[in-house]
Image (cartoon, rainbow, N blue to C red; front, side, top):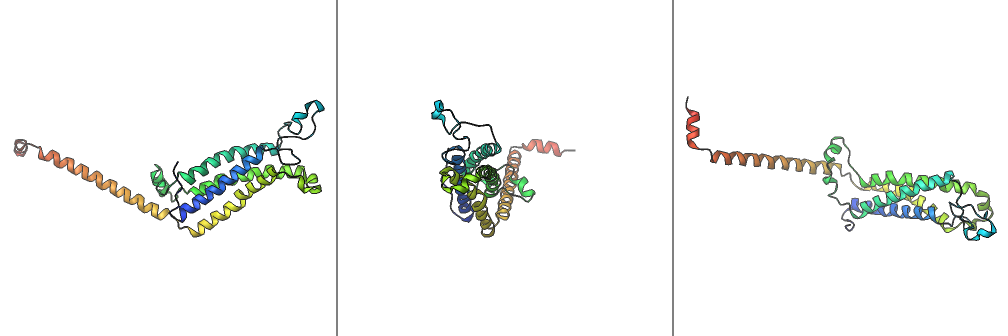
Length: 230
C-alpha cells in the first residue's frame, strides 16, 4: 500500500472523498452491531422479555428478522466492501493508474472514463440509503419512547445517524464541488492515449524496417544476379 497522492486538485478531492466514505462506512458498521440504540438495547435485541433465570442474556435476545434487520445487514455488507474500495482509492490509486487499464481505449472510444470519485459515489450512496431505511424503521417503531425521553437514545443510534449523514449529505456536496472546480481529465487522457498509440506504431515500424535491412545486408550477391537473369 502506497501513501496518498496529493499533487493536484483531482487527487486531493479523491483522497478527501475516500476518507469521508471510509468514516461513514466505519460508523455504519459500528452502529449495526453495537447494542446501544435505545435504553441499552441494540438493533438485534428485544429488551427485557427474558426469564429471571436467564438474566445474563437480558436485553440481547435475538428476535426474528424484521425489515430494519435486513436493511442493516445489507448495509453492513456494503459498508465493508465500500470501505475497502475507499482504502484502495485513497492509498493505492495514482494519476497514472487509469492508463494501465486494458479497457482504457474502449472507454475513450465510448466517450467515457473511469472516475474514482464517481465510482465511490455509486457505491456509497446505496450503503447510506439502506442504513437510513433501517435507522428510520427503528425510529418509527420506538417513536413513542423517543418522544417521552430523548435521552434514552444511545451512542450507536447517533453514530449511525452521523454515518448515513456523511454518505448521503456531505459526500454528494463534496462531489458536486469537485465537478465544478476540477477540470475534466478526459481530454488529457485522450491525448496521452493517442501519443502512446503513435509511439507504439513508430517503434513497431522501426523494428520491422531494421529487420528488413538486416536481412538485405546478408543477402548474397550471386543470388541477386541469378534472380535478375531472364
